[in-house]
Image (tube, rainbow, N blue to C red; front, side):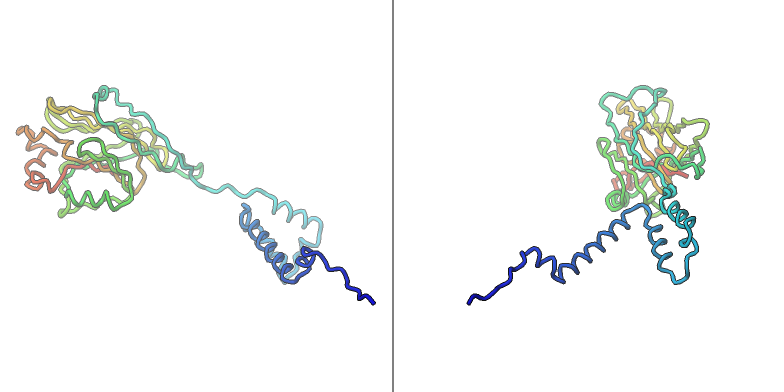
Length: 292
């Protein structure tokens, strides 16, 4: 007598019928739905829908065709545009033709152009800009620590000359710096400004041209010009500044050979040559630019 043995289901059928498999499928489906809701651009409206239908109080709109149509239109409506600023990278060309062409072999500076772009229509930014230019004698180690420890962009311009942009401004005090000369540049209808120091034959000049001052991120072109028969140079730099940022142009090379001109020793910023710390290389010359 032969015993009857029913045919077993295929292994895939067994897995599909198992309680553990069905539980996992429910969990995965829940995770997929949650991920889809989170990644859509209207998660808050999803939550509002869920809360609306989960509420104990009846929803009058849900009981009428007009209410259903209103809910559907509200859910499918595009989200309001966020009031954000675009990020762009530009690099306008320096236009300092009035000061002549750049000296052959002069070091070229990198442009720092990272930041916000044009403001949104709902925001108002003044179409003017005011820069404070300070020429200082600053502790050499202190300035190096600022450049090495704080977030910012640093570029070597040749020799010991450094151009640095920081979002953590230096707080000058009598222990770390001595202010030699301070000037204010205001840009509005006139987009070109310059300050000079020295004599008719030997001088330094800082010429700045405003490229774009209509947004919170102000964009400029700078030209540092040194006129000396032994070491004439022109250093062009494109830069941008927003509130809370600061620029440093530093290095003894900015004033090289001027220490041999005794008739300049009493004029700022050349009074730095009288400093014992400067002669002993404990301090250095720096130009600090702030957006006011």
